[in-house]
Image 1 (cartoon, rainbow, N blue to C red):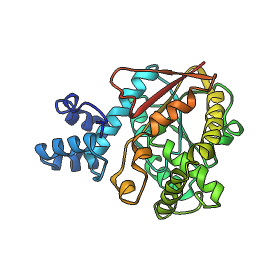
Image 2: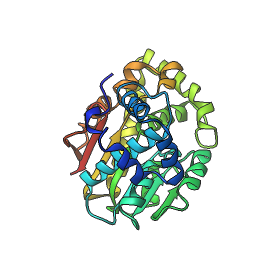
Image 3: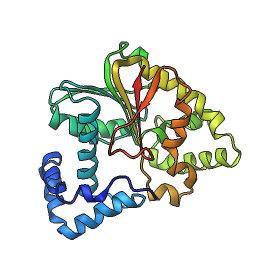
Amino acid sequence: MIPLDRYARWPDTLDALARTYLDGSDFKAYSAIPGPERLSQLKNLLEKPISQFTPVNDAYFRARWAEVLRTVHPASGTTLLEIASGDADMIPQVMARDDPGSRYITANANRPLTASLRRKVKDLALEVVVIEDDAATISRHLAPESVDVVAFQHGVNDVLQAILCDREGVDTVQSDWMETLPTMIEIVRREIDQNTFDANVRPSFLSLLQSLLAVLRQDGVVVMSHYMFQLDLDWGYPPELWQDLIPIVREWVKDLPECREVVFEGFDPQWWLFLARE
């Protein structure tokens, strides 16, 4: 696969970044991993679909999102809206350390994952707002032009899967996400096989994006990132979609007059998409 990042950038700095972005117990677990093994895990993380979940993953992804936020919104006091965060807390963990007192908002419809996220972020030094609703209704909750950054941290696939599940009457709000995932993957695979995926998800996704752009400030940026989990591939996720999700979405958003793509050095367009509001 195309690497997520250039491995050579990280060996000299990852330990210091882990100390910055991991809490005490997580950094202790990170430090307990022998140095050569940490680097081996990092290399695998960057160059293969993810199959391990260790403190090295947390250190890398938090450090990477710190770079993202310094790039797209270096000023302090950021208001960030994350879409379909699940219970992944890497962005609020970064914001609490680099920009304490900032505002983190998540639109996250799945109830069990939202409850888990609340537990993870309850003691962080930033304002946390959890919107337990479909992000397509974001205008009910946020004022126009009130957000600096909109983030899809590995969230695009979840949004597209939820769109298809809604069409099929599959619950993605109250259900256990991992228990529902095989059904989601089967629906996605069927859509790809029948050549209906684009027609059935693109209009709803672009409508959602237009709603999000309306709450984004004029100088704001939408950030989309993606990476692959081996489990999804093992369970039958179509590899051509799983690997090329960001390039596919890039083609869709070209039709939107409300935004334009911007490119930042060091972020491979295979895995990253940045959209500035027009």
